[in-house]
Length: 240
Image (cartoon, rainbow, N blue to C red; front, side, top):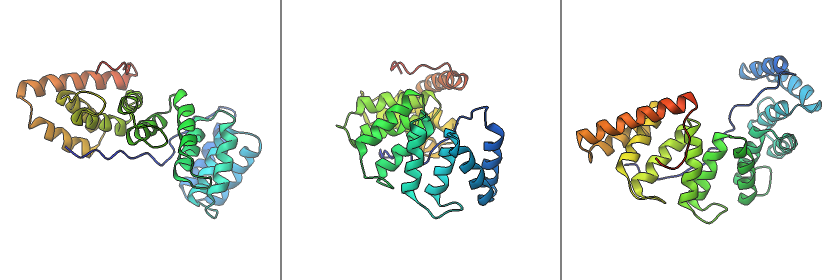
């Protein structure tokens, strides 16, 4: 089994579009992805000046990454903050990352946790995962493996593979829960279905300590859970 090394996700995830400016925003995103930064910046600025939070978020990413502009974490943080005030979940997460890393803002892990919690209340999987990592590592909070596992469960239910893999590690090591090889196998298998190669390696290590009948039963459970996750029907109630 791979030794636990819980790391936060440092990249913002996808955004939710408003129908009011979908076409313009999508055109600007396409321009940015194709390297037409000047065109993208013009459109993002236009929409952001009119109070459109997703455009503020996209513009902030341009400044954070230095795409078409000089990299400016402070400017990115200011834009994320404006979008946060408009209850934009991706911006809550992205601003939390900046506070966690101390980029463009004063390093403040408690503030990062607060922002991740805000985003998590809007069911943001990456924020749920980062909260799990911070509780597992005791970053900005008292280390609490049970709370970490709870946040991982929420992200895992949203099919967030890094959370699924970290859950497997916690069950294997007995962090906050009794050691449970079957549950380690189950969550490694689910993470592997999502392309996580570390989970694939760990799942094979789990098998070395399991009987064939135990492996078969665990795989059936993993398949059933994965089907529910894919259908949006899995509830992270802590029973598994």
